[in-house]
Amino acid sequence: MMRRFGLVVLLGMCGCVTSLGALAQEAAQGVAAPVPAGIQAAKSVFLSNAGADSGLFPHPFSGGADRAYNQFYTAMRSWGRYQIVNSPDAADLVLELRLFAPSGPTNANKQLGASDPLPMLRLAVLDAKTHFVLWAVTESVDPAVVQKTHDQNFDHALNALVSDLKAVVSRADAQGH
Image (cartoon, rainbow, N blue to C red; front, side, top):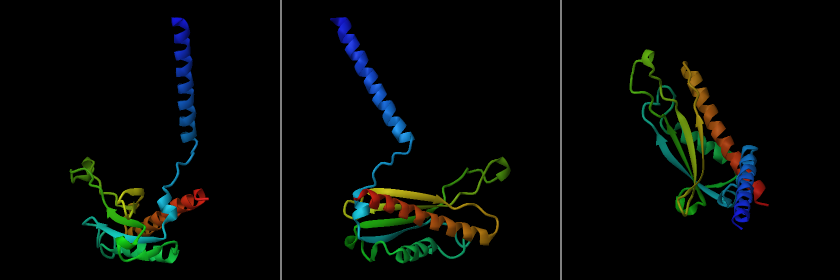
């Protein structure tokens, strides 16, 4: 009797391990988790400027601290997928854009390992009613030596961020059938 119980437990555990292995294999093979329904259902967005860390303007980037927000606003308006509204209360989603540069080592001597911070653009997609983050994407701005290249890399990162958002919305639209 005890032996039979042990066999049943052993077979059950094998089944669980096999199931977990199959789930892990699915995840590794790129089975995409669903995009929150609110992203596909949204009709209007409020664009939120979460700002930029200090020390990024006018060098290494030209323009001012609102550069990312202004370019993002223009890209969203030209995409035309969502109606852009002037208040988060009137929006289905809040798209919060932030330019930040994580601090590097505190040692200022580059020969001893200090490095310049790597600026990043982060876009958080929030449900306007619950304020929960539904999705977030981040793009790094590649380093450069020349001002013109810094600016081109900034533009490239911002365009990549918008492309990331479009890809998420596209996935949401595809699963919304």
